[in-house]
Image (cartoon, rainbow, N blue to C red; front, side):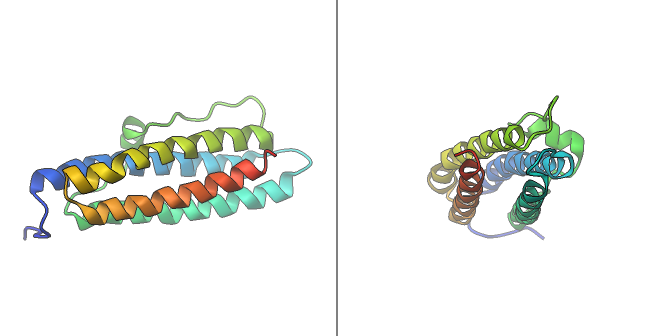
Length: 157
């Protein structure tokens, strides 16, 4: 059965492609945050371990929501590590030292990249693709990442 939600098929395809990139970014960021949770070392280990846990739990929910948004516009969400690495705008973490400050700086940079990407897509989804639901959805994602970035940034002051 064809989905009839008032958006042209070519527009839902374009939105789904952008949402797939967003999903890949979210998954890579989730993995990097899990890595920070598992591998952080130093005198602040316990507090940072718990902090990174709260962040990856939030990202886990975000991943599910993005994938479900893709499905709600009648497309399939990418779901392999290979596809995520091909679609992401982020790079994998390569660290020599597992200090909390290093993890926080790198995760903050990733959140900020995601925020800028989402900000660029909000009007595109609404104006060009006439998908106001997806535009609103990624506005909410942007706000979530802005708050998460603030939390990370506060640790660096």
